[in-house]
Image (cartoon, rainbow, N blue to C red):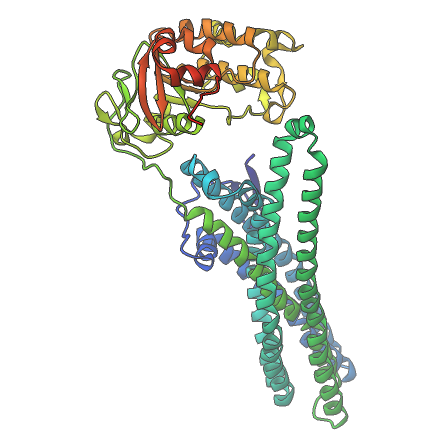
Amino acid sequence: MPLDLRFCDAGTTMRSLPVADPGTPDARGPLRYLWWVARSQAAPMLIGAGLAVLWWLGQALVPAALGKAIDAMAARDAGTLLRWSAVVLGLGVVQAVAGVMRHRFAVFAWLSAAYRTVQVTVRQAARLGATLPKRLSTGEVVSVGNSDIAHIGNAMDILLRGTGAAVAIVAVTVILLATSVPLGLVVLVGVPLMAAAVGPLLKPLHRRQHEQRDLQGDLATRAADIVAGLRVLRGVGGEQVFAARYREESQRVRQAGVRVASVESLLEGAQILLPGVLIACVTWLGAHFALDGRITPGQLVAFYGYAVFLIAPLRTLTEAADKLTKGHVAARRVCRILSLEPEIAGGGGRFFTGEGTLRDGGSRAEVRPGRLTALAAAAPQDALAIADRLGRFAPGDVTVGGAPLADLPLAEARRHILVADNGARLFSGRLRDELDVRGTAGDEDVRQALYAACAEDIVAALPEGLDAYVAESGREFSGGQQQRLRLARALIADPEILILVEPTSAVDAHTEARVAERLGKARAGRATLVCTTSPLVLDRADHVLYVEGGVVRAEGTHRALLETEPAYRATVTRELTRGED
């Protein structure tokens, strides 16, 4: 849901997330992507950085003001003491106001980066379509939403605080140099040395984080596979086997996390040790200079205050190194998704008229208007390949009405050609909404589709009927019930060309016979292709294509092919073909 943030500095300024158009990301590399994210919200980032600088400077100037007040007290100058006391109070107010506003802009930058990453990733997933699961695992994609967006958001947040911290260190160094050149040089030389000391930890941290991220993606994929196939695993007694495999992979992720934590612990220790050494040096030198009379007591207090203050900005810089490293790893994963190209291009500007034969040149399979065509393949993968080409999910020499299907805009092809297979899922939500995905079907249309799919009993058994809530993936329904509901959803969509892949493989023979009888009537006047080897469905088809070796070898009615084609008869009746001994 959109998130509205109101900024007090602008009075009534309202910023809504996510933005309507996230823009075109720069996916040429992780650093380019992070820079694109920052540029996409340039104004909030610049304002946030300015507020961070003001916030840090408000803290950095307090020790100097305190030192002046202490010197005024030592000189018994009440007027000067009051003025510097007022300065300290003013700096506190500046810190409070700037700190609140800085945090608001930091939260906005974090959320904006996270939302923008989710938007461009989801948009790319929709663009890739069937290409995405072929190129990336489920866990790889899920991990982007689980962890990567947080790391990218953290990178934007730390840029604001890190900028202010760097300015504060420079300001303190200038003040120290103006007061005491040796003390200023200690800080000026010490800060780069601290950064250089942390550097060797970043490369192994980067490598181990990358390894852990890969293992987390693999584990998420394993978990998704187990959940999706839990019913089958229980049926074959494979729960313990897969549980052992998951446990083994989980331990590998844990060990990788420990390896990452070992480097992070060194980095955390360095964040305390290195600033502490610098503080000790500054305090020791300042104390000796005060004893020698080279600096005043107030300046000594100020130097000690600066030494203590420097812990925060120096630690912020080391934190920035850690978070930017994690953001770099996360951005690399996002760029991997964004750099993928769909197997199917978008097509030209021709529009589908709803007429004409859909023909696959590779297999010579044809789907004609007004006819229920069945395709029986000796090898199931051949039927799937033909369905993918006809539905434009895979490249091929496919024509519709004699013109190349590739010339049709992809959105137009998806609207008029529907491929429904058993890999489809039921989404969570109100059942009616999940069946009528376009929201255009009337009550009678829904009723007729449920009747044709023999799914009326499923709805009748639900206390709330079509208003019942469907859980994720429709897990409350059996495999056969899910298949019938998916068929009803395809029929409600009522496309000009419908391609069904094994729509009755999970139902009993009695139900299958009723579906076969009703399907042709429900699709009267439309082009329908059913990929199946079920004799009950084949017998009700207007025309049957027999595919062997990826090519149509015979066609005709089911009964005619049974009499004239032994290979077809063996395929659809599950007979054992006899070869030469």
